[in-house]
Image 1 (cartoon, rainbow, N blue to C red):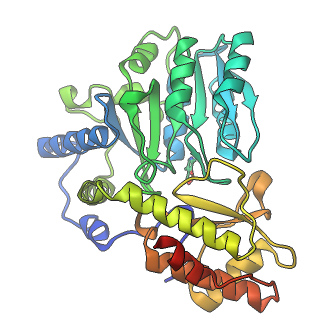
Image 2 (image 1 turned 45 degrees about the vertical axis):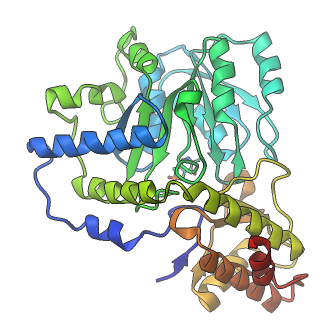
Image 3 (image 1 turned 90 degrees about the horizontal axis):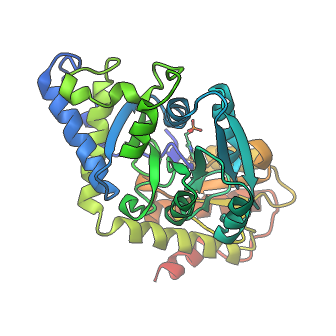
Length: 377
Ligand SMILES: *Cc1c(COP(=O)(O)O)cnc(C)c1O
């Protein structure tokens, strides 16, 4: 088994794996499971400080993004796609699939979306039903201020769909200080569960928009409205993956146990990681908007991304991420979120990266593991 230090999925703690092996009831029929599911959803709402209803859908994080677009988009709807990263751009596809017209607001991939630029755009054109935005766009690692962005959009009567699959539980998000209508999360990033679940937080306004559609939602599995009254009706639209949800609950319990220190730990490790990489002479992809959960490093000259990944796997048993789309081959990424975000794991990762580069005769200006340690102090 490799030590996974990827930008998701992340490492899974033993108590989460154990929870997934508990004996199962029939989740369609047992009222106790409806109570358990609801309680788990209430914890999810508490985690982001909201009264909005949380839901857990059986499907990897992408399902949540698609479900948000499927449930809100009616044929002909104009949707603003805020694009300063690969996932940001990707929302346009979901909008199109469900008959909407995506209009992109493109901004520099090396930094967060600037509110003033977005406002200038909206001054000229604000006829959108909703907008999509990514909290942490993982290919670059950029973090966007989705709380403020959603408030700005709200002033123009535009609803917000925010993808925080890679942000939540490592990057603080206060939903009550935002106008986010559908927030999307996933199990396999900073929450440190295996992949398989989507979490959604849905505002009353978003539910009302779904209920007031002129045309039916063109999906079943991705229809959020099907979940709205699951508890009152004691009915789920499909059989819930009970073992996955047991695991999610254990991970949430872990989160609540650590919640007073978890964000500070992520921030500290992220800052020391960036400092160590730069002291080593490596270049970060971003100029601004560094996230606490993942760091994208430029692939230095004289080596390829694949050589870095392979070398670290083979010689050190450590796995980090490459990238895709416009960043394929340009950066490699270290995930320092959730169970990955511990000092000894990061130190080993930096040592492995250094060894791999030096083996290919790429000079590294300092001992990055040591630099990391001294930055932490
Ligand atoms: C991981 C991730 C998702 C889920 O997508 P996969 O690529 O299938 O893992 C969605 N949005 C963001 C920003 C992510 O990092």
